[in-house]
Structures are given as C-alpha cells and as structure tokens.
Image 1 (tube, rainbow, N blue to C red):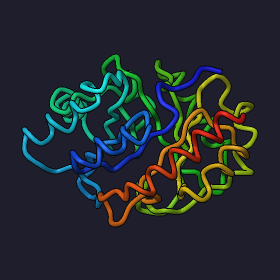
Image 2 (image 1 turned 180 degrees about the horizontal axis):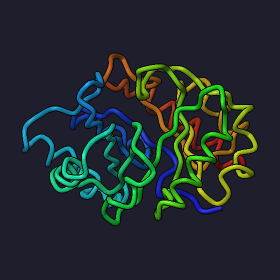
Image 3 (image 1 turned 180 degrees about the vertical axis):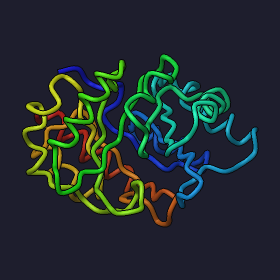
Image 4 (image 1 turned 90 degrees about the horizontal axis):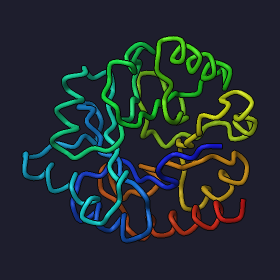
Length: 228
C-alpha cells in the first residue's frame, strides 16, 4: 500500500521553538493551521511565517510542512503555500470533491470526520473525488464533533477503522483524533494506518507543545510502526 510522505505529524504548531523541538524529537512533519476560528490558528507577521514554514527545509525534510485549511478559497491556499513554504495541503473542512481538482500539484490530504455512518461514508466521498477528477494522496480520519473541525481531543472508533483497506483501497489512511503518548501505540496496532496526526494530545495549552509529551508520542508511535 502506498504510504504518505510522513508517518508522524504534529499539528497546530504556532512557535518556531516548538517546530524545531518537534523535528528534533523525530517527527516527520508539522501542521500549520490557517483556520482563523481554531485556537491553533497560525497568526503572525510575514517574517514569522517565513521562518516557521522554512524550518523543515533547513533540516532537509522535503514534505515537512503541511498547511491545514478549512473551507478556504483557492487564492487563500495559494498565498499561504508561497508564504509559509508549504509542501502538502490538508483540507479539513466541507470542501466539495470538485475543489481538489482546482488546487496546485502538491500532495493533498483530505480530512474526513467519522460520524455514525462510519467508513462507508468516507469511501463514498473518496469515490466522488475520483469522479470529479482528483483523488487525495491520503485520507485523514478525525473524530466528528458538530461545528468543530478537529483538535477536539475526541477519539474515533479504532475497531471501525480496522478494515479500512477494504474501503479506501490504495489510498493511505492517516489516523487522528484524541491520540496521546499513552494510546498511540494501541491505535496503530489496531488500525494499522500509514501515518498518525496529533495536536491536543501533546500540548500544555492550545498551540503550545509539551516537548516531553512530543518525545514520548514520537517514541511510542515509532516503535509501534516498526512492530507492524
């Protein structure tokens, strides 16, 4: 099965020191959140964004910066790609399948919040993307909370995702939603995803990473992936 360009991503980075520490801990990618209603919204000067977005390139991480967008326009996404040196686009809102074909030729992660309909609804959306002309490079599955787009700390049904290859085919699955240093190994063993994504599970406050938790998370996830 194809794998995404990262196995371990720490999302909601808002500070340069956190970005450096996350990469030093062994994570493959950082997530930069451009959704203005998120407590992890990356606000700052042009210089701040340039420095934060460029850290991964100074460390030779070719797919190290993922830009997270929620119902943004194509022009908004393009401007942030240029400004923050983004390598991958994560669509975390209600973007229609047709929207993917309008985006530039960068890897796209399509986030889906798993509700009572389970994996079947995610598979239907994937087919709609295929019919519209562009399949995402990975599907990220997050917990469903009405009116919120990720970062809630709620978990998804790992058992319900265990047969994801049957539904998603060759499209890699990235697991998110309520992951922590204490549960990520079990989640990886049960779901066998291609990658994991964490935000609130390694924080001391929204947008402020607890580096001890980050190190513990990366160590646990790495060991679990290597044991598959």
